[in-house]
Amino acid sequence: MSETSTNTLQYRVDGREDAPVLVMGPSLGTTWHMWDRQVPELTREWRVVRFDLPGHGGAPASAFGSVAELGDRLLATLDEIGVQRFGYAGCSLGGAVGLDLALRAPHRVASLALVATSPRFGSADEFRQRGVIVRTNGLEPMARTAPEQWFTPLFAGAQPAIVDWAVQMVRTTDPACYIAACEALAVFDVREALGRIGVPALVLVGSEDQVTGPAEARTLVAGIPDARLAVVPGASHLAPVEQPAAVTDLLGEHFAGTAQETSGTLTVPPMPAGPVPAAEPAAAAPVAEPAEAGRPDPYEKGLGLRREILGDAHVDQALADDRDGAFQELVTRYAWGEVWGREGLDRRMRSAVTLTALVAGGHREALADHTRAALRNGLSPEEIREVVLHAGVYCGLPAAETGLRVVARAIEEETTPPA
Image (cartoon, rainbow, N blue to C red; front, side, top):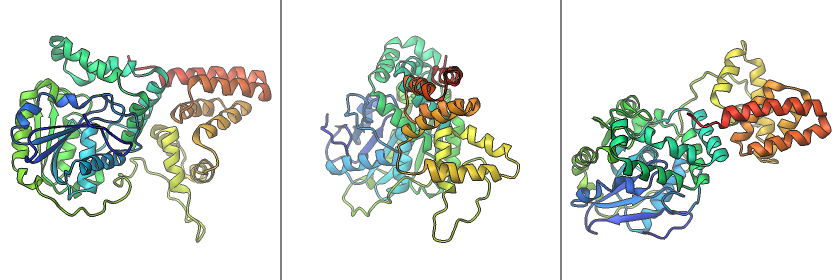
């Protein structure tokens, strides 16, 4: 096992030193051991490098802010061990890292295998709510539901030891790193960039995967110029664990054609900074009026902040309900772009101030919306209740009593784990 810094990842290397390199990335909530059943066969031809996500499998809990930052840490790790060009196989979040590297560092990636991967994972709201649930309840709800998300019922019933192993992997993950990964996946979207991927890609998916299933896999195949689809029968999200022989055969066949491209040294050009440009939001926004000459228009910044904090569903509905868009443009540009976008207060503090003002004004619907926003911004349910209690001293006890009922309902809706 490797030693790591905040800029690198915990990793393990198997196979002979002179073999071409294959890097393997794990899914959220798992460790490099999810690839254990593939390693004996793959190391006949490859030097296999596996890595753990931060806070997973005992790795240092140094949270990352984006999929691109995770990719940067992986490249720094590979630089340390002298790996320049490599094949890459990743599952789910690990597959997102592969997509990011193929777009930002195509000179390093010779070939891709994308297992249970999507160019966009669900919706931003889903992942932000998952982060809220973990922040409030810990990882037990995620651990409890992992088997049904990862395995078919038949496999889970026949392999209780593997199910227990999966649950323990999630339970022992650092919650802050898990939440950070959810936030990173919430904004990951490379749908519009898939056509720029210039390496061969195997898109592998379990036929029974309900998380990132065949529909998402077909989106990847349709968008990547040189991609082929492999559907593994009788497998769900963690196909490498559930159907190890089939997955190993598919990986070995795919990467055999690019083995010669992963050896040797190359000159590494600088990588573009920041994440791959995301697709445009699905909902149409009002056309923004030109800003004053010489002054940045705060509209787009405000719209992005508004979506991050209130959620896509809320913003899409608000935009749809405003017939001419004038009021929503005002709110987005001024309240969000000008005020929420200022550097003077962090988001937690702004949420606390907003909750207080809404209690004072008796704005129940907005108070419920901003309670959900406060949870996304990192306030705990206990802190939100304390804010309302404190507001009652200065805004009136009846206002606080009503406010407490409103926030209690919103907190329950937002933090109750799925059944």
